[in-house]
Amino acid sequence: MQISPALRALALAAAALAAIACGGDKTGTADSTGAPTFRVALLTPGPISDKSWNGGAYDGLTALRDALGAQISHIQTKTPADFEENFRQYGAQGYSLVVGHGFEFQDAAARVAPSYPKTTFVVTSGRVTGANLAGVAFLFEEASYQAGMIAGAMTKTNKLGLIAGTELPPVKASFEAFARGARATNPRVDVITSYIGNWDDVSAGKEQALAQISRGVDVIFQNADAAGLGIFQAAREKKVLAFGTNANQNDVAPDVIVGSVVIDLPKAFLLIGREVKQGTFTGRVISLGVKEDVVRLVLNPALETSIPAAARAASDSVGALLRAGTFTALRDLTVSADSAKPLPKAP
Image (cartoon, rainbow, N blue to C red):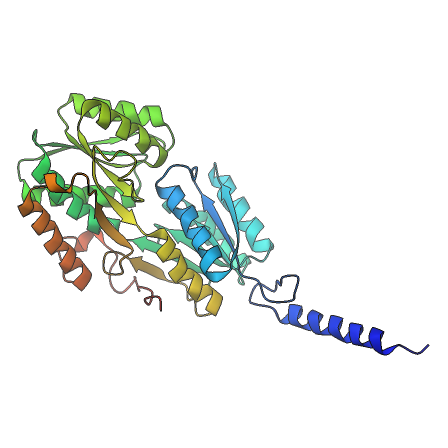
């Protein structure tokens, strides 16, 4: 049987597409045109509607879609068993990059990563490493120290409140840094610390804030994700000041939020995503802070004029030292230079 020229051309085209698909990228997957795909998945421990930790991570995921053309997927996990199950699911599907967003994902990522060497696993606020595994140490304590300096100067009762969802090591480090910063501008301050027990209960967050306010607290530094929205409610009702965290929360309660200690998760995700897509990723602890412009204190313009000038100047001076890498007051709270290697700046 003789094959017509048209059928022969069609067969050659199909063979070419198959060859491209087999070549593919490191995940071995390709789109409908045969071009390699870059697929990224995100696991969050809470809802992306929290306007904080989880919402910022989802913004990072969509930045990878918009800037790098990634195909994206997101799952909100509930239990540690979900962490491992979903890591394995995405690894088996050949995803290029899977991000577990939070300190609590470390153990599951370390167990799963060796089974899927073509997938890169990343844990934020973590320090686990492997050939295809990285922990991202956000130096949140740096800008927390600056926020503490301002809070110490603004309190009228000399009582500051610290409220978080649960007692995780990165949270404790940022609280200690905030307290140190506050005492740098006001040695008389007393700090009251509370943990809600979860990250999602808005009512419980409000109750903890009201309890602290009843003890004289007039400035609250919170790191509580969705539960933080209840803390802001209490601050507004009782007319005390507060700080936002993780995302820029200044607009959530602009009449009481002095500023936000922000983690620029889109920038961090893009830095890592470029490495993975370009095939230059190496497993290590990645340190990102004020120097890399991933962590920063963003003051609320509506309340900026109420900050004492001397405290603002002192905070700005510390910021300059942090950007230069010469600030030493937090060295015992941060990752050592030997274990944390920052990513190169984006082009």
